[in-house]
Amino acid sequence: MTKTKKRHISGVLLLDKPLGISSNKAIQIAKHLFAAAKCGHTGTLDPMATGLLPVCFGEATKFSSILLGANKTYEATLRLGFLSTTGDAEGEISPTSATVPNPAFSECEQVLKNFSGDILQIPPMYSALKHQGKPLYAYARNGEVIARPARKITIHGIQIRSLRQNELHLCIQCGTGTYIRTLAEDIGKALGYGGAYLTSLRRTAIDGFDISQAHTLPALEEMDAIARDACLLPVHCLLHAYPAVALDDQSALWLQQGRIIECQPDNCAMAAGEIIRLYSRQRFIGLGEITAEQKIMAKRLLSNVYWSATPV
Image 1: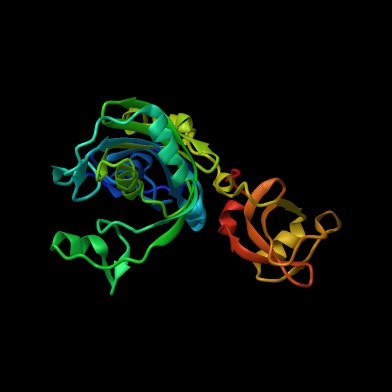
Image 2: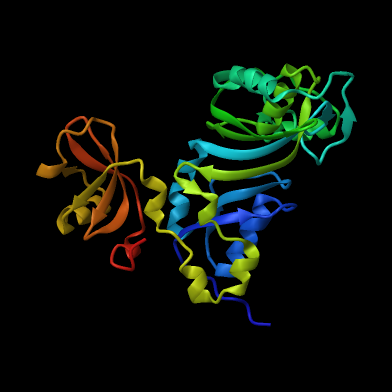
């Protein structure tokens, strides 16, 4: 059997991760479909979660950390009055001791106001956070509980999609570091149910990317190579928050050689430390940084082989 030759392709695939597999498994399938030599991701989803998972190929992996701190949107369904050892449907489920009637819509709205803005959250034991070099979930699987300090997170908004008996469906917009499983449990406690767990979770947006732009694995499998490649977004789509600066050929070459260059007349008056997107002949070449002397130094550049190739 001949081994598939790996391709040095670059770009960003917006993948709609399916239920029941890990993010790493989904990424490895995508990597195989594209025969990509290099592949990475911008943050994981639990196996029980579905939805938007940006996958970075080639040169895009240099900038994959950009989305780790991005705002995200989730559709979450909470089952009130029950607890899970993992906070979701994959754990051992048990009812709480609370005996209260099903909540009213207005009651839920009132309680959810307390979960908006900057709040404190204790990370769950079933998480990848490290304690003495080991992830917390390793301790949890052995029945150990480690004290975790509360961390500040930001909830930009919570809207009720539906309320049916003890099932509450929410749309949640949040900042980085938010554990939706913990948020669900805390909301259940605040409503008087002693807790809640997630029966479903779907990520629908990350920063400026939306689930409507995403591709499923079955759809990608049905495509030929040309159609699949057309699904890739350019590398610089990850970096839209940074201002764009155009360079002449000589300045671009000097940066690639490790030199610090002068700001050109139309790029002056930027603050020291500001990160900028760099282009040469309308092709993205990487990120730069404004120095205290109002010059431009390279921060992270694409490999120069891409500079004269198809825009990435």
